[in-house]
Image (cartoon, rainbow, N blue to C red):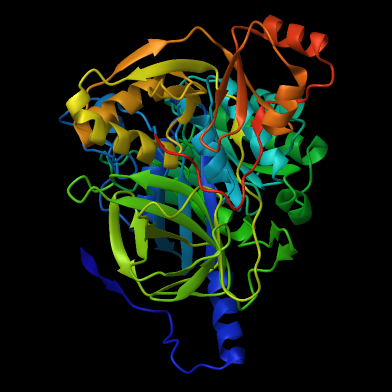
Length: 555
């Protein structure tokens, strides 16, 4: 365990005015963002390079499914290391340019989009990573819509410019046409693929030339004025001339810089570069810190709460079991929304009405953790979770408030989870309940109480594989998965009483979720539409309503 992190200022016997000033200073220093992308766009590589420039790590590891490759900081789960993919969210806090940055690393694989959605609930900004060759991809489009729902500012980093790709103007046109999102290029590439030479900064018109760095190290940069005679010796004149002409076209017909539109998610600043070779990563980070919004007011049942409010509030957006397999721990990720969080403080738990003393809060950095003394709006803290927290829970001091809950979305794959070894039932039950709590997969239950096998309800097949892998390696239980043949789930609005009014229904299976609410499973959309036609008074929802004041059922 790392030594305790010192407080930004000793909280003993400070006045309300001093506390307000302290919170204001901390909020002004903080930037919080998540990275969204399609798989294999380079998200984890970009994350590593941002940490490298922030001084948080000394050497970045490439994401490869090979044992001899350096393992990346953000991919800490064993299955992530084996497959070279991100399948769980992590939090990485580091300092850069006198700012405290909270980077929320999200799963790149589309089967884990629900985990990404929960993480975006805690983000103030989003970085949309795009492959220069492939342009917009399905997962990027889906996650963009989530950002738009939440009006999150979006910064676009077009990656892999050192490989053959589409024309930069075509990439901008695609973003504007398909996402209905205005673009503002903050820099412009000189060449692409093997002829990628560097960038032109739009405001200063400086030219940044890069030299390839040793793998995992920071790249060296050369900054020259556009009229510097040395430039002709370093860059082919036709490449430079083409880049200047394209940039001039953006000036004439493109959008203007508007901070209000950026912060409302209607205008995206665009950056070009290559995360693998470090081309453009530092310029992106520098300008991002200028343009990104700081911690913002968040909506509660009592209206928006300003982050400068002196009363501490926060909400749980993620649960994770066994980040440290040696201790079989469970950690709740809490986004601090207002006030100042202090070690050993006693807070109220909005859902249960209980008071909780938070004695061992942790600063998170991937799998690594260190005890912290305080935290401020925009920060994410880790709390030991002895089964007390659920995703969406609000913690607060002062007057009772509850932040908007985080809903569950309709799964598409349903399978029985069988435990062939009855002697391992205790570990099986513990593993299933803990993985359900953290949202690794949704768990449904048969209405027949004699059938004790849980139903795994997932967005993608890889979720089921992860559950089986974790049950075996973290809980010592080998399991069998048996597909059920259903593809659509809908929650019944009005609950069991409404379902009883309808009477007998056909071509679907009735199950219950972890909150004892009725869920109907259908083999296909046709069966769903047939039921709706037969019972027009039955209201069904593809999104599970948020629950407050009730504990979930367990296996």
